[in-house]
Image 1 (spheres, rainbow over the protein chains, first blue to last red):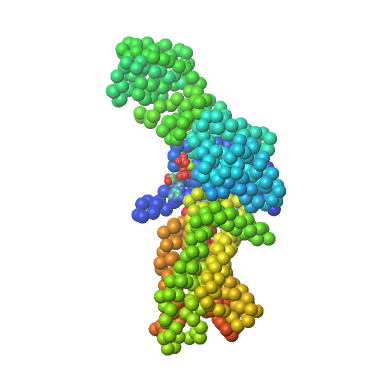
Image 2 (cartoon, rainbow over the protein chains, first blue to last red):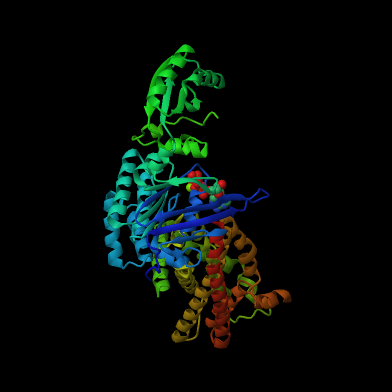
Length: 354
Length: 262
Ligand SMILES: Nc1ncnc2c1ncn2[C@@H]1O[C@H](COP(=O)(O)OP(=O)(O)OP(=O)(O)O)[C@@H](O)[C@H]1O
Ligand SMILES: [Mg+2]
């Protein structure tokens, strides 16, 4: 019953995972994972970030024993997921990207059944269900069928389902997608509490950079089935040397796409900034010393007859890291409304004009 | 032990959800009555054909046939709850928890068995009201009915397992329609459910000998006869039990393919 040898300090250890799905009907197979590796220290939150189709869900499915890797190894709570899946299942909670609750049962019935299947006695399961309903502010809806829940309520119940048995390792696949800012903030607080008080290890996938920045001790950016970069959020940001410069041109400037982009790029060429990108009327660039470069940028734009609405100087954000490593801005990948807490990290525009 | 507890919990879930759709329950009970009365009227005079085996009425002849038809057709749909759970992510949650695979299969069997036993009792009651009589003494009748219900449970288990395996392998509701069209319907016609096979072409009688559905019909009919040949009853029940165990094992193995395609 108790988990066997737990590698001290490492709750999740994935090494060179590969997985290919058959394409079906003559289409070529899809390579979902292409040698993905990472490790999660016990009792910490680890975030997997990446564009749609990067392989985040595939990774969590393999670690949660739902799916099998074609090659590579993975240990969860010290146990090999391919060799002893039944032992892993006792140690984990898994909240899939899609809803996992039974819409034809009530919230309470869902939780009690989940608890009992995890081995809790009838009384314990009922008590635990009541506790979780209360913690996720679902008590009022507890005895209604889940079909009548709003998307956000159903999502909270999904996460509660993964917690019923106080797992050592919790997989949360996009837990806050579709939640309003208030509910998202509640969920964040709950996740922080779980790692602090219950010393749970959490693997989180998300499209929200603020979420990873706030919750995760470590982040891995995944693209095309591989980890392209991993580290603490701060270390990743430090890797991007210098400051970010963002200049908004005045609304009066005609936005004619490529030709405007070309004019702007020419205008700032002499100012010594790097990584210049123009999206619509927004100019983004990096400079070793932002305070010195910014006046030069503004002067260049002025000389070219391009009036400016606003200019900001910012420390690199995870969004910059993401963009740098995946070549994609995050906004395009995001579904639903953004968090109200959207700082500069959330302000990225559409697709990058490469 | 865990598997037994899990089977109980999951069966309770199925019953709870079934009870939430009363229309469904009513339909489950009305449908076998319609069959009984329809077939009973349509073919009433076939008993007068020389060579028809039974000494009793046609209603008495088809009652066990209708009981088994109801059980088989119902169980053939058992997999639809798996398909639903797969679509809803409920199955993935079960599969990443210590939930017993065997219990997942067994719980759909026992849910279907509860429904089918209820239907069988309704069919027997309606037949009795319409004048059919089974067994020769109250003791014999009780024993006969119990043996018939055992056949119902085993037949249900066999076809629930087949339906579950199909659901797990294909993940599609459409595949279950295929089972109904391609397997259960022909099995029904290649049996003695509504027609004495001695009056059918010889090959039908031959096929019927290997038809699990016919095993259940024969066991049930013999058990309700005036002087049952218990050897025949237990022989058929044994065959059915064996088939149900094998198919149950196959269904449990089918969970592996789910892991490969997830
Ligand atoms: N069951 C499956 N059958 C076939 N292909 C699949 C299956 N699951 C995932 N894929 C493919 O594998 C790749 C990785 O998918 P995955 O769901 O892991 O991405 P993701 O990073 O979670 O994306 P998202 O952010 O959109 O959730 C995609 O190309 C996807 O189409
Ligand atoms: Mg995903």
